[in-house]
Image 1 (tube, rainbow, N blue to C red):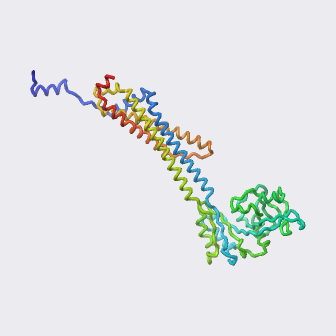
Image 2 (image 1 turned 120 degrees about the horizontal axis):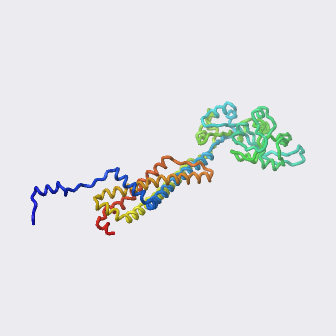
Image 3 (image 1 turned 120 degrees about the vertical axis):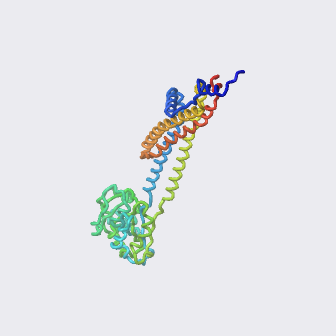
Length: 414
């Protein structure tokens, strides 16, 4: 057997038998991946379908969850405590806490929208005629100044509420609720009813009140008229109180400050009643909705990732000969690996974009059908695209690793 010396060996190594290591730059890698994706649109569509559905479910779940959160917040804001009632601790409390100076101090508090005086009298017989032989209907009488009427906020169906003019002049006018008007057989304003033998003109009829539902079973008249009717001076009876309308969420704070503003020399003589603020319940509901939305969205995206992984595995199985040919002409394992995960990453990102658009469309359609204002976070949409691309990369790791390990000879024999 003829042996070559060291010199001849070096000549062969440096000559025609010299082997060059295969190289693949990023431009070639991107071009090859793009051609592979575009050359088989059916296979690419099957691969990207799971990501489209996952991203669409992700964005739709987050969008609808955020929209629902907004609706919950708005509903709770509309129902948050916005009223405070201040009343004396005993009948011996001086009447100074009801004068205009005390009310002026109260209305200057930050968070007070309006505040007014009210007095509730015992039931009085009210009738349509002055004939004493006919028994009238006994109804509770509420005296309220115009500010207190605004706090109660009656929904007038006829007429209007009295104003400061009627209050200053103690005009004999009153407001009736629809049930009381129906009971008295009154269907319009301008008619007279008689209370304690005195005529009162019906100035308005209301269907409902925003606050103090006890007004639905009573008649409302000016505060100055009611105090004369009671035969007592203002503040002498325990059934005098002050109604306060507050800004959203300020009821608890005003409840602690109102007695001090009305009676700074002895705030303990007064007590303020404020309904509890449902902020804790609102936060709990919002937190539960958010957590549920995130879990559903993550599950949808995980399903999309598994789907794209399965589709990529099936696609690689059909490309075994192509992979073997690439290996046979000098393609290295890492070239095959990088190209395949780049393909799945690109498909994942493309599917994410399509899915985001589909999710936004679903969110808008459902919100408009329910009469809601759709709320979609830009960060959520961009995040879904990025997550879809990353999911595509992760889903291609195992199939790409398996493909890179396929021996060229075995691949070409298939």
